[in-house]
Length: 597
Image (tube, rainbow, N blue to C red; front, side, top):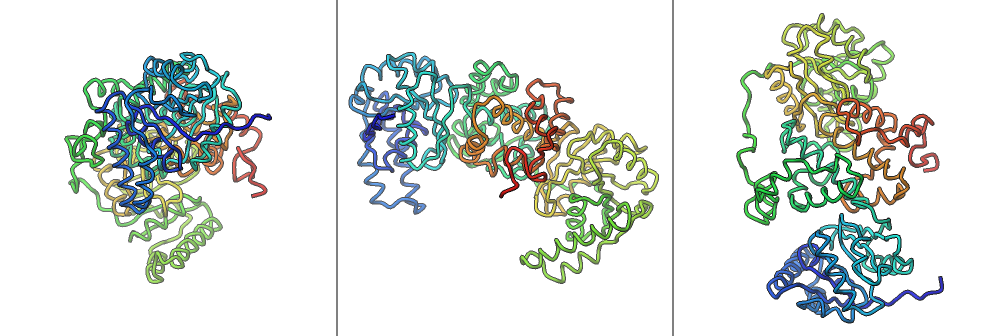
């Protein structure tokens, strides 16, 4: 414990691609002298251009003054060959993800660098242990995984092997703090935290697209608008590079116990072979203006804009059945959009409660300046309150928002089949049950569709429009037109457990629980990794506590029952917490204790 932390004044960076140049910038911005090394003069010039481009953009945006930029560049010494690193205190490599290449570099660094130098790898998926054994100082080898773009992203994963010296870990943690980064320190396993959780989700999204389950635009819109993610999964794959994504998945599959969810989707291999690598090649899941451009251009898969289907049925009156939060929100959304709404609940007491909730929410809208008093009064005036299903005889659309129990929903749909006029569209807001089961409880399965609103319906812009194999095109077109009239985004998908959002979201949450269960990392570090490394609005454990552990477990069970994928089996820890009554915020305790907050 008495050792003095080593002085790190000069650092070396090997490999000056996007990642390496970003790491050079981070060190130089924070007052460290950097020796930036490449393999050839040509590669060195490209690295210099990467750094110049990034710092010039920062100046243009007012994030960096011209004098600070010039001082930053003065701290960087560009050199060809590893011999230039003969006197650095710390060196990090950011070369392509090939084990033999990294091992060769580390063997050379071991000869060139002074005995005290810490040798670090920025690998995102390879074994730090396997890289370290190429040296005679494996106790001084560590993983320091920056996220792209390194100057912006706050997270650094520090990966210690079983032989990394504790003082090396401490020195690197101190270095990260000096760089203004947030670090999480973990042991050496496939994918570390962020990639282990991120890439299973990305691969699953590719499989969805490959199976024609939903369009690329709908998959991406669903995750951005349904979960608040900064990018959709397929656009993110294009940004990362499909070749890089393939390498990471393949490595994680081989190193991580051959979980099928990390086995790269066949489409990914085909695209890489065909040179469709994403933004850098100008074409991946999307087509770009030119290689390296972020600007998406239309291609043969781009949906035609503004096509109005001929078979859309007129919808003027809407019935909403249910008295929970979802039903209340949906009533308000339709009434504000100009529809005549008939609210049907079981009993006068529930009806009065829903009425009060809608009025309270509309009043909040007025206070926040989102609605005028006249608009609020008009919306209230469009709602009729009832406790009798028979009153739905003449509506054009019924939206069911009752409890998530199949028997209850089927009984309701059988009743609606008898009551509603021919041509009425019958919609269910289920988030996890098969829509076709509701459809087959009627004699008009062609008129049944899923309209999955997200909570709170007044705020969330997304609606999943779910078609069964019996849903008619006219009903599907009508549903899409209605969602558009509400000012919301409709994403279409087939009737499969979890639709798009839950099918991609909950396995990721389940993986996070399994990671915690394996004592690989803490809930706080996992949450920090996903928020700071991937830009997620909430970490997985924060989100689980908000959603409710019982709800999450029920959805995960549905996914597992339908897909029978071993990787989707609910984490035992999740089951144990639900059994113990720790359901999240609503009970005061879930993954965290909420009673004293």
